[in-house]
Image 1: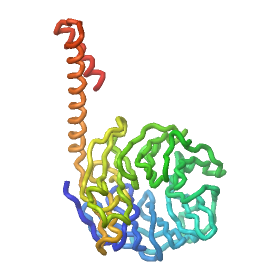
Image 2: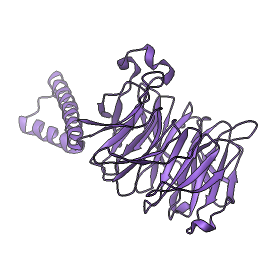
Image 3: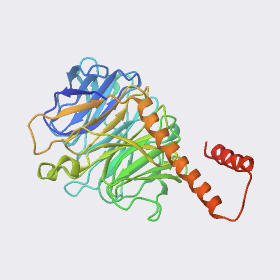
Image 4: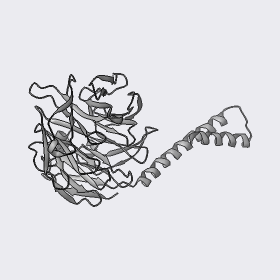
Length: 376
């Protein structure tokens, strides 16, 4: 797997987002300047200048014409993707942490941090088709959540909003009234703060990553816990393949300790898990700092991209896009499955030999064949 190094940002990266066609990659960083790249070759197309603080998140419209970004300068900005011009600025009283466009690109959900006596909040703004009609009117505001809200996304048909943050609770809200519909409990939910949240392509489920060294898969309608993926590192970023049953987790030790330990001790690899079996099936090395963002190309087979955070290290920070051969990952996965099968079959044979039963070879072969069929 040969990485493509995309140099351009001067501070650690915070978020990555592909457009719907998968030919453009948008990156956000603490250097105040969102950037757009060609996804195929890593060429930088341009930057969007206007923020005065770290840019935490971004989203792109379905037609790839408009970009929205949320920043620590207490604004969210709407951009023209092609020209780089600012179209409109939403102003808040605290940093804008997360942005997510609704289906149809007519609404956007924005989360703001607790700051200077201001509580954290989820706000819904309307996006006008004609930019001359754009206003700063708030359609809905949800308050009362303790701690920072790290991510909020739209649920099915824009009827709900799903949020997760520092209080380790996943919540589902009514998008019209702001009423709390469901929330995760202490038994099945995360034990520490939720750092990331990503939806599946079909919108039927979503995954959350947490500092408790796990990621959890949830049903998007009733918040039923489906799967749990346990790793040995804090999880900063999660993503799901749009093509295969693959989950990718990224994280590592805190950025402040990066320069004091070996990169192997920091555990900065991106880990692949099988979505159904919850087993680790592979990993991609190459980073020397914690992974803060992950993004699958919409085609699901060309590349998996994630970022390197070298805070406290060299001045130049760069994005690394690792070209992942999905067939290779599948090969590793099935090799492990076959080895696991052989271990179990060997155990059955040993058990039959130790028992007093003397079965004919034909019956023994039939038992083994039935066992293989059940596994496959």
